[in-house]
Amino acid sequence: MIPNAFGRIAVFLLSASLVVPAQAQDVKPAQTETVFRNVRVFDGHSGRLSAPTSVTVKGNVIAAIGPGSSTSSGAHVIDGKGRTLMPGMIDVHVHLTFSALTEPQLLSPDLTPQSAEVAAAVQAKAMLLRGFTAVRDMGGPIFGLKAGIDAGKYQGPRIWPSGAVISQTSGHGDFRLPSERSRRFFGKPARAEELGATFIADGRDEVLTATRENLRFGASQIKLMAGGGSSSEYDPLDVTQYLPEELSAAVAAAQDWGTYVAVHAYTPRAVRRALDAGVQSIEHGQLLDEATIKLIGERGAWLSLQNLPPPLPGDPPERRAKKMEVREGSDHAWAWAKKYHLKLAWGTDFLFRPEENREQNAYILRLKQWFAPAEILKMVTYDNAQLLALSGERSPYKGKLGVVEVGALADLILVDGDPISDIDLIADPEKNFVAIMKDGVFVRDPASK
Image 1 (tube, rainbow, N blue to C red):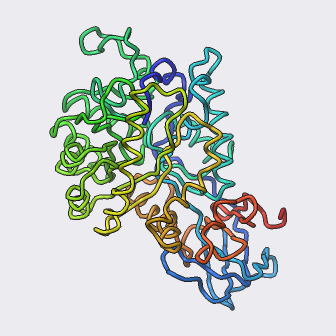
Image 2 (cartoon, rainbow, N blue to C red):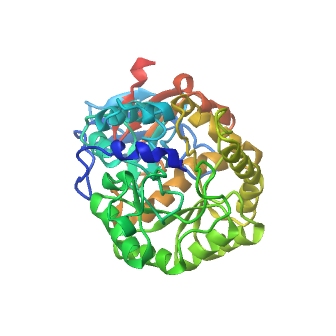
Image 3 (cartoon, rainbow, N blue to C red):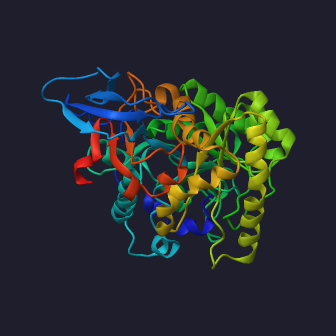
């Protein structure tokens, strides 16, 4: 959700080096060997921990699991002391740039693409140190930051980027100021379009082009705005956006590249239209009725849900009302999604309040009213990883995530305690995450604890 006030500055937030290789690869560590001894494993999908065992990491993959899974004489041995080894966590709905700065900072004339990227990089590192080793960025300038992380310039999670959101005229991604007129009639692109914060695309041909442009830049999935938003000024929450043929065009173009379309949508009408077009991931959906949530399950699509933060004190009354309506719909959406066994994913969707990013782990605990601790851990590891895998060959990182098993990528957290018995442990990563490993490299070394 990105407010239209952003039109003034969104264009400045894309990295100056926009075009990066479509499949930028992360830098591989040397073939070092690390052994976690005397650990109990949460494998990502089981309802209980393993008996004490050892886990061996060679290079960036898990090479062996078992009490005898050792090792060369030069291995780095970690005594787990009976602690829990679990997969790195995954947040599948973030906006790394837009959550790194406040609205006044974003509107400041002093903001540059470089300073915005640096601010986002600071938050990306903090996110990694909270145990989030992978994220799906669902709209905004991201390609420069992702390339910097993959090249080792910055520390941060693996990023599955959507790139510029795709919106109809007057849609949730139409960031224009009232003074900016339509490109179609007056020939000048909006400032936000010029640097890739959004594509305002109307009609089948424009939607096809916008989708293919994002794929050219390296998008791992495509994000369309299919309905109104709670944090925008110009599009009411109830409106349906994009015609069936426009949605179908984006889906076809994404499928041709082996990936999928996700849509921002809240209402039954918007979601049903998206499902009919072949959309595979519904972002939000808090205003859905039970029948539409059941339909999502029948179609085999994903529901990517969030527990949204309260309105900002300075929000206009109309925006406050829309946000409260969405928050109030969350209870039914989560309960029905569980009832009908949907492919269910979790994310945060924080925006404009950098201090709120520190609550990322705590927001997971809000799931306790609907799910048991083991179900929650599975959702933020294994289940979210399955949604990332929907990108297929467009995934920028090759290998299995969200599990602790032989052959999986070594994104791991060593937790001081048993999070299945006490899920609250994950809300204080500074205290309880003894070690954090991404791609076989410690980003928090247990020696520092």
